[in-house]
Length: 308
Image (cartoon, rainbow, N blue to C red; front, top):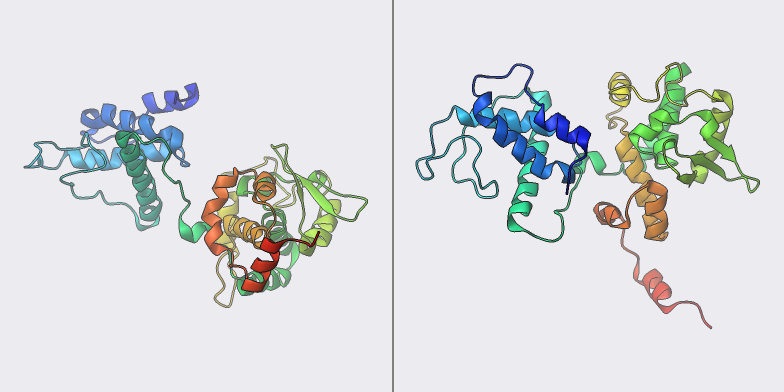
């Protein structure tokens, strides 16, 4: 698959901000590896370049492997026969960097084997797992007891992600004018930047309808800003507003997962759920193990069908 010109330019022009002396030894190989796997990666190409470059630069300073007489980035990513000492990363960066490198390794190994289907691309489990029903109820109660703009922001985040299934970037871009009430009483949201129209879950429609009316043309989440999405807007807010009583932090991804799993648990057609979420039906597979199995009586009734 050919990379788009912008991504290709980022790869060919990449050089670390504080390039070590070893960079020139590994630069071409790093760019080649990232170019080979970037089009199948959910991560930004800059992150892949940074992580791969750090590891390759570290490897370039290690002694040559006695069995292969190679150092630095090997030519067979799926079966490295020796490994240099890992570079030192700040603890806050260690987990995401490890995920980027594992993804790169899996993709390159897949390319080497020449398989026809792409490898499964999964978000880290702790980021995509839905909250339990008890956690979700407690988080809403916590948000409800906040005051002022903090309460409005918390409920907007929960309503848009858990009540409409909006992705993080869509949450921050949603304005009051994107929501409207239908003659039936249902509330729908025109997802910003897409052609999707999502029906709000009944548990959130009254709150979001009132919030949208109050916001008008302004943003529903963090209204006093001028851009649809600032870098780390959600992360910065959730870092400052942490739930009490041992509850987990608010996460737009986990709230969206709650919405998806709730719909799948109601046995709504997967194609309908995927279209509302802006995903392919196959992308729902990673949520299926959170969906409770049907009890035997319900399963029999569904398989039997209605009497003719």
